[in-house]
Length: 203
Picture 1 (cartoon, rainbow, N blue to C red):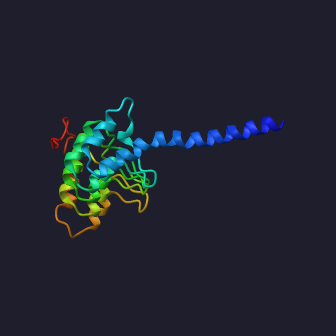
Picture 2 (picture 1 turned 60 degrees about the vertical axis):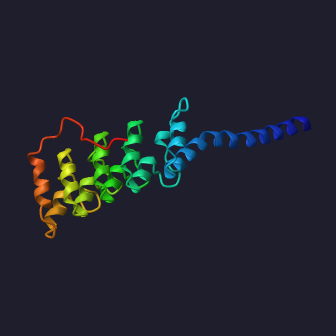
Picture 3 (picture 1 turned 135 degrees about the vertical axis):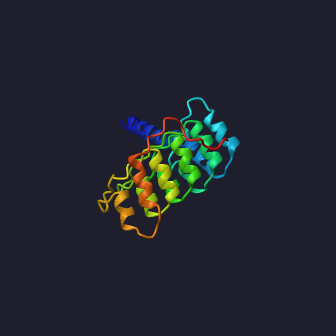
């Protein structure tokens, strides 16, 4: 009986020692990939992406939920953005607040980033946890060029958020400080959705 008890304890200890090793093996590539992106270490990123069966390209930070594209948009790095999107990074993954890289690009007034993300099939009307669309955010920022860009890509000016129950058009009509804002949204009635991709930067 005592022998069986000792064996059970030893087995549990062995499993406990093994489990962190397995976990570390699973998560180390994720950590190293995101760190390499932050550090702009192109060689390290490429090495990790080329590992057989690698899925690190869409890795998310365990705390914020952000992925590599969120980091790149935050630093307004058009070259890296195009590079990772071309490697298959998903532009529609969200952070813990439901924000996509497109929403972050709009928030940062990173027009080239907005254009590039739309080229690689970012969902133009994907909402965050507050029900805001990138177009609503662009209107709130009174950024007419980005409003025009989103509308040209089919953004819906009448989609309402969940916080105030207002649409991009509602917000624009309340703003009398920004010439051209309402007119940019009105163009949604007549502008056809483009059939080809918007040209982005070359890596």
